[in-house]
Amino acid sequence: MKKIFKFILNTIPRPILIRLSIVVRPILAFLLKGNKFTDPIDGKSFRMFLPYGYGNQRNNVLSPSTLSLERHRLLWLYLQNETDFFTATQKKKVLHFAPEQEFYKRFKKQSNIDYTTTDLFSPLADVKADICNLPFEDNSYDIIFCNHVLEHIPDDTKAMQELYRVLKPGGMGIFQIPQDLSRATTFADDTITDPKERAKIFGQYDHVRVYGLDYFDKLRSIGFTVSEVNYTEKISPESVEKYCLAQGEIIPVCHK
Image: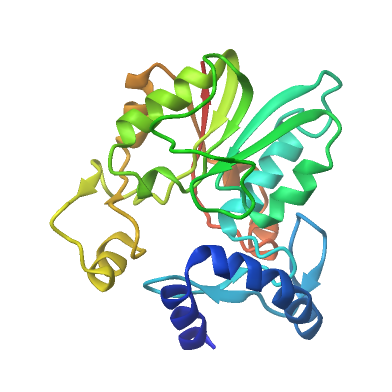
């Protein structure tokens, strides 16, 4: 199964994968019903989660029902337990880059947010836009989600500046990235262009860097106030295992 999933991820373009997954998802959820692991996003339980990874495959990480990964489930728990994202009575404007399927319909249904999605290629995007040249006015959004996007962007400094520009003063941004916490500094090499070599070195064929611990300071240099939230520290080890989370993953919570 791991080889099949790796082949699919590395050969089928992401927009097509999104469309195909809508059909396949309910079949997988039915076949893998059980009680060992639970997806906190929809509360459904399974005997196993699916493997995932463009380079090295990780076991029990992809939820059969929502297609969420570790980072998505961790973010959901953080928003649910530590913020008023789901409960705020005053309507907030939310901008979501490269919207994930597991969040898209749920956020769309929320009456307490004015929800806009954006991406250059995603079929789920309301606005097709370049993150380095956004068509939005300054100080437009109360909340911005831009998760696992910046590692794809050659000029991530410009992208961060645009995120800062369109976020309202006092607003919150969550900008998750794949991060090697053993690295002090971010690694990038523009001479690496072969997709297989990129997948091996950067973790995915279309990534252009591996972020290190200096990622947070780079966000601060743009102007953000950054909280490095290790949210798995607040979750019991039993729940970390049950929800298939990545122990020690840091959520970058940014404010303007």
